[in-house]
Image (cartoon, rainbow, N blue to C red):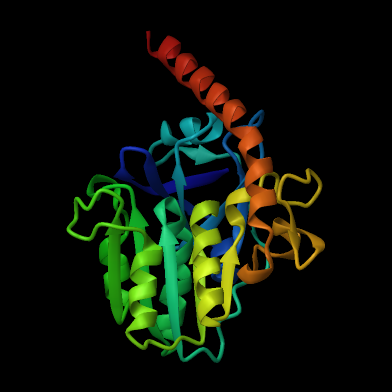
Length: 280
């Protein structure tokens, strides 16, 4: 059993928990993920490691409440335990030797972008972070990004924080202003990463995309994270999750992942109804 050490609601739909898992904390690197089960009968779900505390053995994950498992997790409190917490899994991000990088995150994907930006900062890399959200009310990790970024731009779709537009608008402005990056690293919704890749390809900037959002069982057996990269079939959980964004067939991935949305919504609604019945 893996005890929950900390819990924080980052916005109404996104929660951070720190789990006591010293062996995972000891070896975890940016870009890697864990697989957990809430209870003995629960489904196996992968989550990217957002931070580690090697002194306490704590491993932090950030999740959005979209399905049955995340609904169950959100009902757990400090002192409660998860049944399984396995990792670290996946290939670590390749961050050595980079002098200047733009990290582009969107929504809950910023939880994955943050440890990458933090490690780059600790390596002495100049980090420009561009993060985007629908509105000011759901912004997460702004202070954390500010602490490790040489430049931080926070965009909102509705402009409620004063910066209206997409992350691609901000990135284009930086590139047009003469900023030169060794690499752009993008993590967030598939549609966002698609257009980041389209933009940077025009400017000839190497771009890496994390395909963590499409992973399902995390072992390569389910095929849910299958994608085409440069004409070859890859699996995000075992071959990635990071790939050359200019070689990913984003349209193919988006078409397949849309098939799961109704199932996730139904599972989430059933879990909510179950919790309501238990309370009554």
